Length: 182
Length: 423
Image (cartoon, chains in turn green, orange):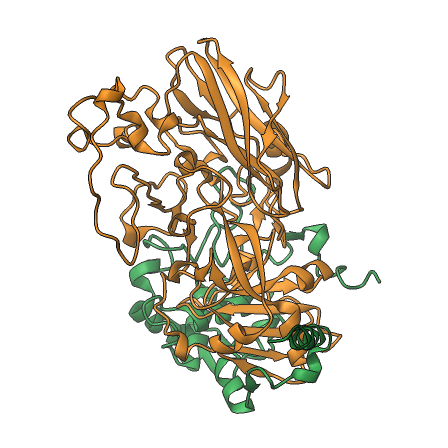
């Protein structure tokens, strides 16, 4: 390669870095709406991303017994993995108990996490209805919805979790202020 | 800990030349290379030269150098069965220099280590963009790349010492969840330009391809957009599976959990998603019961690694050595006290000092044989100083679990035993 060619190549690389949009589709390929839908599973605190469907705490009790109780205990307590219920009023003590009821600020996060990561051995294996149902059951164990309660994409983001105001953002990355200064 | 730790680094007697083995009074201290412990009294005692082993396709450590991580669980749950472990810690007491050996880089995962075929791995970049794209590993490798040495630190590093100091801990137990490697990959900025991100997008969700689908919301500050990259190389080779093979996000200076491993999706949005990891998990519970959220940057920190917990020293010359790091930038200075934090002397820093990378420090010391305490404190280029424990606990309480960066004190008794203490 002559030094002129090298200069030319260096020019292309520099140009590529500075004006990358001109090269779009030179790398990778367009994502189709159908395949994006397969992976686009995240749920926001406003409920965005929650699927159609619903589930009741009564249905969820059985789903929980079949899929969750082995690690989390019969009533979300006393299992070998994270405790899911109780602990309210302990956060300022020397032995805080952080559970869905005592600590989690958003009910939407519960649906999202069960849907993406649980049950541990087979994540994603619960149906949408089962996921809503077990979400409802865990909320009912914490007294956040009644034992015969039901959740869906409309009601879940409206649930006010007991510790909703328990979080203080680090000023440097406070979402309420971060991109509004300029 | 059992006596196993105090004899770590010593070769078994049977492994060593029959000619001589002097007891390991300073074995742990010198023990970076365990074979140094076996001594030849005169040059005549040094074994004769002889032809060595055949060359090989892959070199292993000397049989005299025994270096291992320790799989552990939550504070106080140490030496657990690997199937119960949630992390595996770097043996800083046996390492030298600034770079952590690849196989000893600390490991933390939330659903094991997935076995990913790179030919079947894809990265989806979508959300608030004009051109959602799918990339293969080969696509990334064809792009302009950067290489950078950075530390990655689990926010749980130091968590053994929040409430008490178990005296029998090594620096591996207390500080083994931070490591420094050289990473190679594609600047996030390059992908942002390829997909033509909307100007209104201020946050990005990064998601892993592990069973837990670990996902974090990342604020697109200028610093992060300019410094984050998607790595496929680690110390010159493909990422190890434990560290995200075939690709991971690297976020210099930020929580280990943000450096999403097995990266498979980047989604652009305009608000945080409030995932489990940034609400229920990596938030710091303060004494008043409120939890600090989005404390994303790793703090200014340092620790003395030699001599450190469970080692034994002797009166006379002692070289003190350790590691310092800061998520704010370069380390400006490290000071060491050998008289229980009454007076401080500045340590030497090993060059080059790199931004958001661990740097080795050292200082000469002559121990007079009297009980004392040794401690280090670092200050970074932005003037952030590592706090003493009292100041730190006054601000954070003892329930925070994550982001522990108080000064680490080691006590030394009249017999030269080095032990973990709070201050």
